[in-house]
Amino acid sequence: MNQDHEAVETEQSSESMSGYTAEHSYEYAAVHPAYLEENETDTEEINCWGDSITEGYGSDGLTYPEVLEELTGIPVRNLGVGGEDSMEILRRSVAYGSQEEDILVIQMGDNGGWRDIRQLIRQYHELITKAGTDRYIIISSTDDPNDFDQIWGYTMEPVGLENTWYEEAFEKEFGEHLFNGRKDLIEHGLQLNGLRRTETDYMRAKRGYISLQLRNPWIDNTHLNEDGYYALAYGVFEKGKELGYW
Image (cartoon, rainbow, N blue to C red):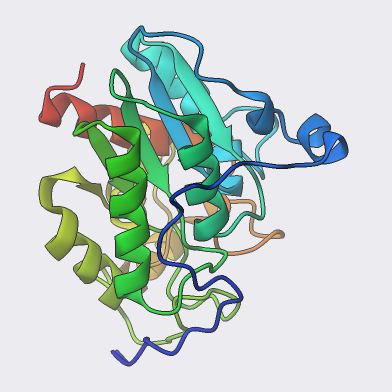
């Protein structure tokens, strides 16, 4: 696969969000309740930061944070806003304040906001550092590698369960804190939902693509349906157990 992915264009180039104060319109806050969330409690919560995947776009109302709350028994805040890039998510998290008592689940980068993978990784680190917690899970992209709209880069090479260039970079940087969403959904997503693996699913898996039974394919190669979001939540739940978070 092409490894030269450091020329990704973005309108957001600031490296640090120190001193940021959030100013968002009333209309936008009304559409996206995550902007109304305030850090009002000192009790342990799970804060899920992200874009439309976290928000739950593509399902009929089921979100992975909702399922994660049911699985863990810990209050979960869905802090996902569709369409936000990584810089916007970082800014909102910094404005949210201390999260030292909380567990973070973060998935960002699919909408840009970074020039190269090193900058995106720095943004993840800044979000975690400013939150003040060492308990976090990073979800890598659930894009299929052949999605020509994705910012990660388009390829028709069969990836299978090997790491893509960006998954490899995340794994090297975050180690045990990384949950590889794409690979986990390929391996376990159908079984978790009691779905039969078809010949098409086998062929897609060999190429590194998630089953269409877990997606809303008329939308794109990124967003999931209810079965996909359930499997994503279960995978995050298992990763949190592995890390001793619940």
